[in-house]
Image (tube, rainbow, N blue to C red):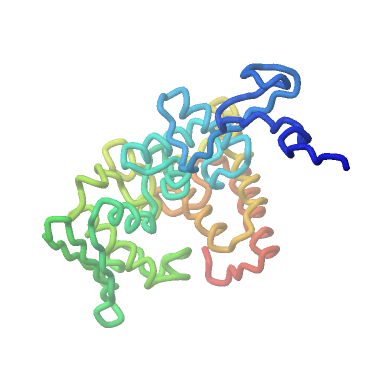
Length: 295
């Protein structure tokens, strides 16, 4: 009777055991042999944080080319400013890009980004309405010190905001809350905000100079606009209007580009201004935005 061979004698040699970090060649040696397969170590995915200014600009350029940047932030330079400002505040690039706006050439923080920023630093923030006309906000520092600020309908009227076309007419309570939040955050967390303005304040208050004062606007000719590069801004605005699909974004785009006197499309020659306004109204009709009462 035939003897059964030992299993170890009949089975082929087991395959080489490959370390997760090694590339193993066909003959079992580490290296770049034929058929080598490199297995990358398993790592946790976290937000990308650039380490140099060159890294920031390359990232900003990639974001600009991708078309994923906010509509009002189209150039690598604008995106770079937003990312750098965010890094100073401890925000990762993609979060900063959605919460920081470059308004009239200066970085600002959108009001809805304030709670996230303060919570990340150990602050607490509480908001409520006292009746119908008073928005309240309380910021509590990590050491327990509380700062409470309010913004009222009377305050909004005194500032010429109440009933103003745009967000103040569409979402008055929301805008009251944003203002009280901005005051409380600036007074109670000045060390965190680093002197940043809140975007809604800058937009609503008109163009700000480097000193923070409103500046009068003088309309220029088409020839002057072409010489100083305003035509690029004009084309950019037309593209932004055409790509707007959200009514509130379209309204904010127009509000963001008013001059110090409240006229839309700051810095544009008369004919270009009319073209932008026509584009705005046609787009509003396309996306179902009711412009009745909107100036």
